[in-house]
Length: 263
Image (tube, rainbow, N blue to C red; front, side, top):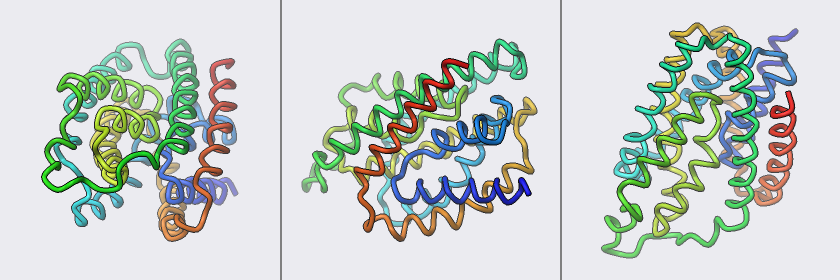
């Protein structure tokens, strides 16, 4: 019976991802911990590979339509992937199943969910203020950050958060890109965020797999539900009140974040 519920959970999260673009980690990881009673280290490790596989299809589609600014992706990966590898090394030394490590995971996850809630609300309010298109001849300038060190710094922070919590590559990543690349159109910001999340979550997820913190059976069930969910959500994306949904999601993430911090 639990198999059906896991598939339905994957479908629900996939549907919301398709409708809003909100990262699956901010929804799936708390759901696995609170509703299904999955241990935090298993929830994080499994969700990282869940995110990698669910976003891979979107990245291929965006790459074919030439919506991805690969310079932006490389800027962020240069900071996030080394930070992820360092964080995995630290987790290996501490022991992911160690009670103190799990406490660190849940507290960091709670704080990250609060940041994600703020980022989700920020995007809902200010997302339309970003230019819809790049002016002719401004492509290189639009893909140039305010300062070359900032993508490395913010990428490292996001890489660390994602590896510990599986959360951060979605709404937080979009908000960071909005601040670092103010001339970049929103659709290209979202495309870059999805594209750089794939190698990051894949590296972090495979690292967790090497630690034994991935439930492969659970992962398969979640993917069975999420793939049709994302497909359905993406077809109804223009028929739903996105700002209302994002605002409600922000409240839900705040609740989950506070509850995790209090664990």
